[in-house]
Image 1 (tube, helix red, strand yellow):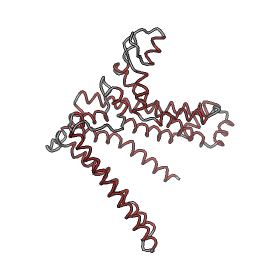
Image 2: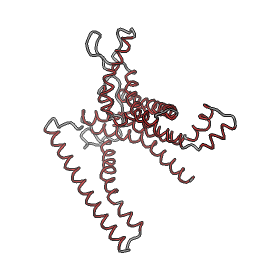
Image 3: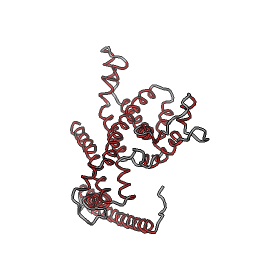
Image 4: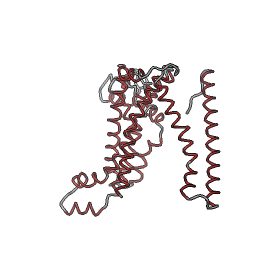
Length: 335
C-alpha cells in the first residue's frame, strides 16, 4: 500500500508522477483503440493481410514497452554516468565506487548468498513436498495449504515472521515465538535473531523460501505427473525400484522444469526488497542490492550511484533471462 506524501516536495513529485502515468495511460489506451479500429477495418476490407493486422495490433504494446521500459532503461544508464544531481558527467566513477566500496562489496556478497541459497532451498523443498504430497490422500488440500503463502505479499509475510523472530529481553512480556521455544527448552538468553550477522541473513531467506516453496511444489508436481508411465514401468521391469527410479528416470525427465523454477526464483530473489526493508531496514549487515539501490536513490538522493546499482542489478538478471530464452528456443526447434 503506497504511503502518503510527507512533505510538499513529496506531494509535488507524487502529483507529477500520477499525472504522467495518467497521461501515458490515456495515450496508450487511445493508441490501442485506434490500432484495433484500423486493424479490423483493414482486415474487413481485405486490404491487409492477417500478418499486417497483427502487426498493427502490436502498436500499443510496443508503445507501452517504449514508454515503460526502453526510455527509463536508457535514462537509468545515462544517470549512472553522472553525479548525484544527474547533471555532471563522472564517467565510470559510480561503477568503480560500487565495486571498491567496502559496504557495497558486503551488499553484493549478501546478494550473491541470497541468489545461491534461497532458490536452491525453495526448489529442493518444493521437489520434496511434491513427491511426498503426490502420494498422500487429500492431495489437493495439502497442496492448497502449502501454496497459500504465495497469496501473501512479501510485506505481509515479513510481518508474520516478525512475530517469530521478534526479540524482547528476558523478563519482558512480549517475546518472539522462536525465542520462546528455545527458552522453553532451557536456553535462558537466546540472541536477538535479527541482529546476529550473518545468521540474520539466513533467517530472512527463510521468509522468501516459505513464500516460494508452494510455487516450486505445484510446478514440479505437474512435471512429475507428466512423466510417461511406460518409461517408469520399463525401468521397474529392468529391476530399478523406489529411489533409483526417481533419481535415474524421473529427475532427468523433469530437469528442464526444475531449471525454469530455479531461474524464476533466482530472478525473484535478485529483486527482493520488501523483506529486508520490513524486517531490518537493511541494517545489521542485511542490506541487499535492490535495497541499497533504493537507499542511494531515495534516501541519500544520489541518483548517479542509485542508477549504477540499478544497471548492475539489470546485468545480473540478464544472463538468467537470456539462458531461459535460448533454452526455450532450443526446445522449440527440437520439437
